[in-house]
Length: 496
Image (cartoon, rainbow, N blue to C red):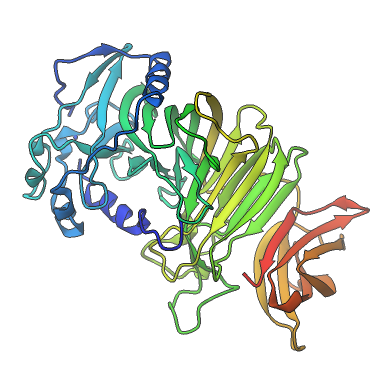
């Protein structure tokens, strides 16, 4: 996802999702039915990897289904799949559009038998969809709750999917894999071409999916559960490279960060902050929590955190105060965080964070993912299993330790020296921690810290930094007591 790419305009896709809100009573199935199993899907992906890649052609009429046309193309509520059953697993489908022009195949699995769904333009209201043709196919699907007043899961576009938090809000997205994301001009977007949907509980849906792309194929199984705290997904995947992949990203997640209180644009938007996520966090193999506040850089950049079997990582929306955003339309403070936890040790590799500049809220400009140290080779198989937790949790992974609440930056008042202010919460008034600092690309001139008067539990650190020749300075900061960590380990790129 380079700065010049617009392949995933997140706001347009979100608008498309909302336009298709009133979607499929059980859909008519074609006569074709076949035995289905996870093992069979893995075999299918493995065989596909031995064949040349063939891109699914886009529907030539899909470009005519713009935002306004999509608003008119509402799926008929009476056609909702499993809509007559109690529970939170009611499926509605997306039509093709300018932003999702390639059809996917969808089948329903019951008792080990898969029956394909038959597309019919009459499923949709309005006059736009019939222009796509009698056999246009679907673009994706969404899952509605029991009240039918909100959806909690959506698969739409390439291999992207989203889930909601406890406040019935979408925000950041995930995808099956990322390929060469931080390599300029080389990123690829394999796509889910086939889905098998299986209702496995009143609030549980199992989604099987076939991934196909020029670099690899894959079989995916998502066991999706709606809980009171948000959505939990248990993911199993088997990947089969078609060629050597320079940078394979597992458990990738994509978000938007325009600005926060530390870098509000002058003369720009009126809102104090605009972002879906504000923090990359991860827990090392020894449990040490790390925090890397997000930035909107002046040029594309990536941060690399080499680890051996980290416990978990995620993109968080930690700031949950309405008055920090003042947006009463999209409510950024309600956006879910996403936390990925592998089911088995990952081995050597790195948590990567890729950021590129944006001047609006309409493009996802942040990607986080795990990259194995071993480069994938054709003819091999890569198995992965992990949990994705979409919640509104404020601080997953840092329970019992002080954590970052706010970042501020600006001039120190002395020529050539910048000031970085980091506020922590969770510091008792009886504790005055030591401030440990380190820096690459500069020097820390002064480091001070104190409890913020009138703000229980809050501790402010003030760092004055001289950057080397204007270069980027990588700041590392941690609060300690008696040489023991008292806070998460903070990484910050001053000058980005």
